[in-house]
Image (cartoon, rainbow, N blue to C red; front, top):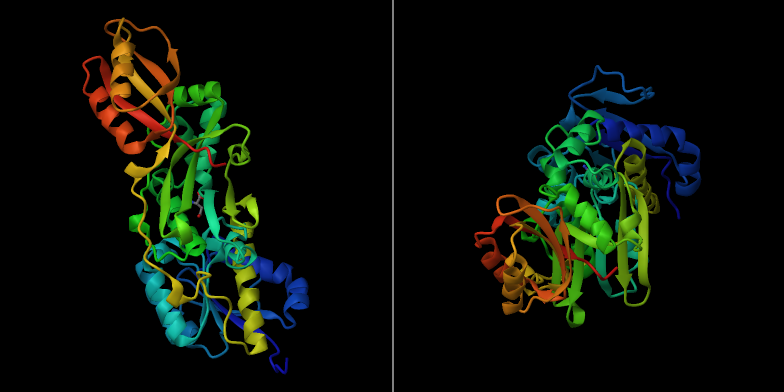
Length: 443
Ligand code: HSE
C-alpha cells in the first residue's frame, strides 16, 4: 500500500441525534473499525450552533465550536459529514467542502433528490467522493447493494417501504381500526412522527428516497419533482377492513420499474398500494423499512432494517466514512461512481405517465344505499373497459344515508379507470369522491 497515513480525519457539521450517534459508533467500535481500515478514523472537529447541551458522548480531544468555515478549511479534515439537514445551508456547506477538496458524507435525501446533479458534478470535477448511504433506508445498506452487489444485473424493479413514520401509522391503523388522525396524533405524542408530519405522510420523504434509488437502479438522470407522489391521508378504517377481506395489506410504496429494452423508459412513483398479505413486504410492520430489488440475474431480493434512529443511521454514515477512508489510506482515486453509473452514462429517461399504467385497483365508493345504484356504477365501469372482480358492501344505509361499497377491479389501464371514476363521482347517488388504491402484483 505504501501509505504513510496514521489516521483519517473527520469533521462533523451538526451534532444532533445522528451526529451524536456517529461519535458514539466511532468511539464504541473504534477497535473493529481500525481492524478493517488499518488506521483510526479520528473526529478532528465538530461544528454546531449549540455547543452547550450535553449529548452524553465523550468529546475529549475533539475541537467543538460553531466555526463551520474553519472546519471546512481545516487541513486535518479529510472527510466532512453534513448532518444539518434542509436545503440551502446544506447545499452551500457541501459545495464549500467539495471546493476545499474534502470528501462529503451526508444523510440528506432531500438535498440530493433536488440538487444531486450539482453536488455530484462538483465532486467529480474536484476528484472527491460524495457518499449518502444513510439517506435511504437508514441503516439498510441498500445503496451500496445497488452500486456494487447488483452491479452485474439489469435491474428490473425496486419496491420500497421507505418511510418508517407512514409504515407505523398504517400498521397501527390496521391493528386498531382507528382513524388516521387518531393514530397520527399518538405517533406524534410518542415522538414517532414530527410535529409537522407533511414530509412523511404526504409521501415526500419516500419520493426523495425513491428518486435516488431509481437513479441508481436505472442510470436515470432524475429529480424529485418528476416523481408522482401521493401520501396516506384520506385512508379510512374501512379501507383496512376491505383490504383484509380481499387478502391484502395497505402499504405506502416507492416503486421504480424498467420499461422496454435497456430501460428506455422507467416507472417511478410513490403511493399507497394493496399488496398480497403473503408477500414479504406486506409483513414489514411498524417503523421498519424494506427494499425489494429484482435483477435479471439475481431474481428477487429483499433488504430489511431500521429506516431511522440514532444508531442505525449512524451505522450507515460510519460505513460511508470507512469506505472513503479506505481510498484515502490507499491513496486511490475515489470509490465507485456515486450513482453507480459513470456520470457520462446517466440518461434522461422519460417516465411512464400514470395514465398508461395497467393494473388491478381497489375502489371505495361512497353511495346512497338505493336499489339500482350499483347497477349504474357497474355499467359505467363497463363502458370504460373496467371489469369488476369482487364487491363488498359495508353497512346498510338507505335513501338518505351513504354506505361504503368496496370493489376490486380486473386489470385496467389507469386512464380508463380515471375516466370511469370521473363519471361515477358526478352521479347524484355518489356522495363523496371515490378513493382508488392501486393493487401491486409484482411482489
Ligand atoms: N422521517 C423518516 C421516516 C426518517 O419516517 O422514515 C428519516 O428518513
